[in-house]
Length: 181
Image (cartoon, rainbow, N blue to C red; front, side, top):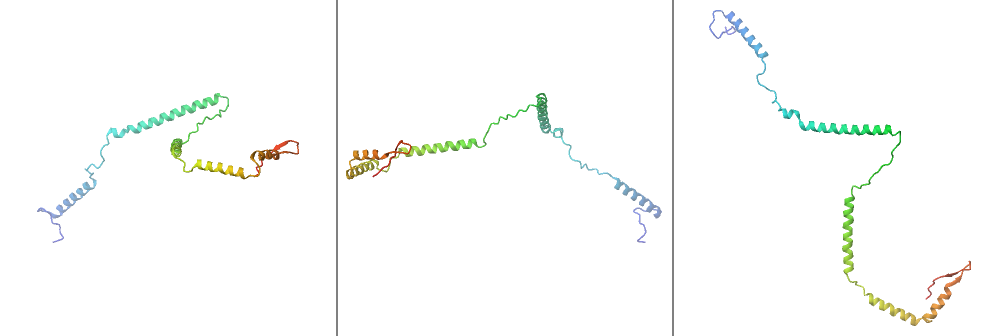
């Protein structure tokens, strides 16, 4: 009896009750399989100001206006080329502009300032060499040399002038400054 159908409520005919219960169960299973979800899983509706994207439209309009302007310029150039009867304008006026001109100018100014500083330091500094003593020593040496020499200075100068003037092959006189000591 454990395998026989046991209805929940007391019935007069078990077979009929089993048939009805099975039919109700099948009907329930059909409804469960055909049911649609009741939970709304769609995303939130985006606001209209987010859908329009005004900035993107503005950028697109600007890009289109630039393209239109470029097209008009090209059309005017083509028209001028057609009207010019094939003459070529080959004069290119380029202005040479260095990318690091400002940096070079600053370096030049700094070098100029450094040079001025060095010049001021050099000009304000007194010489460590005793120039006056050297000059006096040289004058003394020249006097001694003249005193020791065989001929007096005036006679020696005349002799040198005579020896320097010689006649060349052309018949011209030439001066050769030869210092003989």
